[in-house]
Length: 270
Image: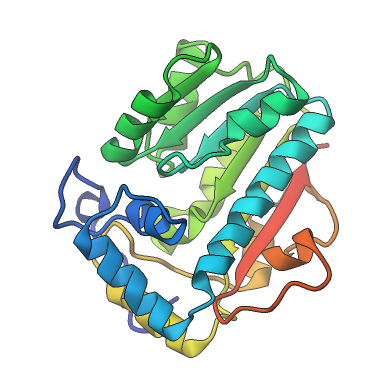
């Protein structure tokens, strides 16, 4: 649990409302750190507070992005033709469908987010390509998402699927049962499916955890967890090397450490 957070805010208080410039949004903070323009003053203020403690944060978000796209490439190269990006955030090119379709032009991709602003951006920016869809859904209600995907024939769970959960699960509080979320998807996945996650680590520097504590009672509230806790989420998947490790270790041997530690892992359902 992040220092200073005494418990989860009620779910209703942590669900983003559409187009509210006075409400902190994790998606818009991330957009700002990536150099995007779809963010408001409150998002920039939070990002700047974090940057004041960890100037390398903008580099780290690109490491996270690169890891996610590397996982997509790996899954596509393994023959997977369906991709589910949970907690997709505001679109930033290259997107999952662009990366997947470089390897397999017929790949189907569904972007899911619980922020109406994010889904509006996805609808506007990603409209057009067949086989690419955006869905409003809360990862804390996995069965609702699975039902929508099946009913709308967006994903065929009888065939392998690659799921990405990039910097999403640390926004799920302990009493919202993050392990059960993963289990709900895992149990519907066909053998050969992939799961890639990025999760904030409690091994991050104390000053970073203290800044993050300021997101309490917002939709951006977080709970960073240990490597062991993060690995437990991947029960039932065979982990690829280097296992649960800082995302830098997945990308190259000489990348710098960062005071905020983001753990990456990729697993395959046997």
